[in-house]
Image (cartoon, rainbow, N blue to C red; front, side, top):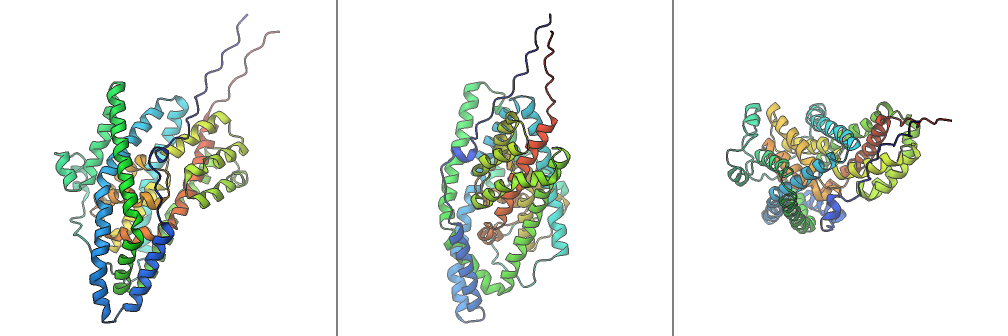
Length: 434
């Protein structure tokens, strides 16, 4: 008599511990920042053409510049710490079994698609719907030469990583940190753990610093908004509305892709998927955090008939590593900033930006987008030769596109959970001998 076959062990669920839970809690005055921008723009509009406008600009410009420098100084160490921690976490997750590798394969493939989407869609949208005329921002430092395709390829590996870091050459630094992180996973347990703790501590400390700087965002954005209002008048308001619509449109494409994945790869019916997902999307809008929406996503997956072993494994992994809208919307913001700065981006610059957008998303954190706005988009802009000063104004309205970021991420998380579940082979019942 043949003994009953032993079912294959199911992977243990990954606890919902993400980078967000390991770092100190940071609160950003999002509504105050938006109010500061509005107040600055209104005051600038009132002063435009008045003799006092020049004096107001002389007072506001140094305040805005100082605040932007505070943001910029944190980007390199923050990106290094987050990227190292994210790659180590991804490699560790890949060792969890076949289901983890299948999930990571979907995640990595879609993130690459998301980066390419942003690099293609946003320039096309800007050609179809140009930025309103008459918008002039106070220029900061010269961004330097926009890299061509040959420059992109030549800059992938740094000849001296210290010099590259000193020159704020983000692309070679990111490649170096990525290689360093992968190499650390081949070390023995003790040195690997020490390096992971070191970089996690570096990222955590920089998060605290950027939290301090963002706490002053209402003041810095007020100064930038005042300058923008004086220079551009009512056209500035049109440009900000234009920016919100275009960036949100790129994120909407990602969200729609989530429905398509659920229907095609997940083999779910559209009405059932949409109905099950709706409560989680409501929570996503109210919290603007994928991590906070995790319990609702688990309920949505249960309503869709997803196996508990799949949803309890895939969703925490997706919340930890998968920001589906990140590469596309981050690229969209950087391309828009380039247009505001008067730069034309060629294929080389877009390729560099897409590569950095893809790579840095593994170090992103599941927190409201205002916190990670500059740390996520700054490296992309730097890789493309785009200055950071337009981001100082755009960050004030990030609270609105961030709604689409969270909606798209939550939709995609549940969609790939359905896709992974549909790809798991049905276990065959053990043969019974009577």
